[in-house]
Image (cartoon, rainbow, N blue to C red; front, side, top):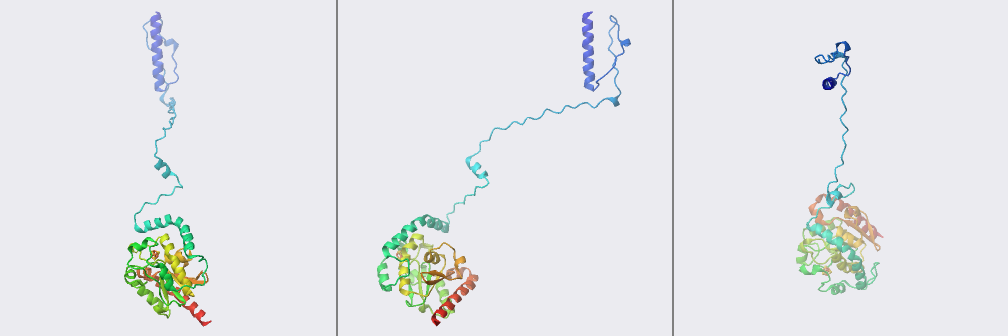
Length: 318
Ligand code: SF4
């Protein structure tokens, strides 16, 4: 008997669970229809609510996803640095000759102060345009068979300043090229021929002006002289300027500009206006070799040289 009751209860529970799975949450069982104890057990007739009243089954929200923080990935030091917003990209290393030259110049800049001190020790106080009791020949004798900088190794000959040493106009370039190295005279190649035309354009002749360079020996491959090379040779030119005492110096290109005026400002910004070298007017302009590569710049050079011509005419008139 007890066993039958247990089975009956188990059946009822099973039915209730089944109906709950179907969404039925209430039902009535008529007690009068309940089977009598002892009679054959009958399954209770569940009164299922009509479909329209079946409540919408409650859909349980899925359990919230628990974000499990991933363990930090191993990131290389390079990747971390590259991800920093302010980190600048490193310049790609280049083996271009001009880049190497720039790097060499930067590396040797620190030695320029020492070179200047050396320059003063050798040539005395050249902070002003001093009265000179030298002659050009004496300066050249001092230069001699110069080996003071590495440029002597590749030269054919030293290229001295030429022209009229009493001229009121002096042109200064960078260093001899192949033609100048072969002939022993500055500005005799294609750039020199163009310079001759520029001089003639302002009403003068080549032999009436002075023409020189910062360096007197040809740099290998026509590269730009390094700062130590320029600083080693420049004092000879300064002594010549003190002898010649021009009214105007035209510096052609960046090397001449930077070394005479001790500036790092480029020729494009400095050209077109007079600057001062211890009382001497200095007009920076483009190098004739640059004009051969970019003839459109001739207009600027002509404008610069007209100012030189006008200034010289005003000085001569007084
Ligand atoms: S470039 Fe000037 S300093 Fe250098 S070896 Fe020639 S003359 Fe001497």
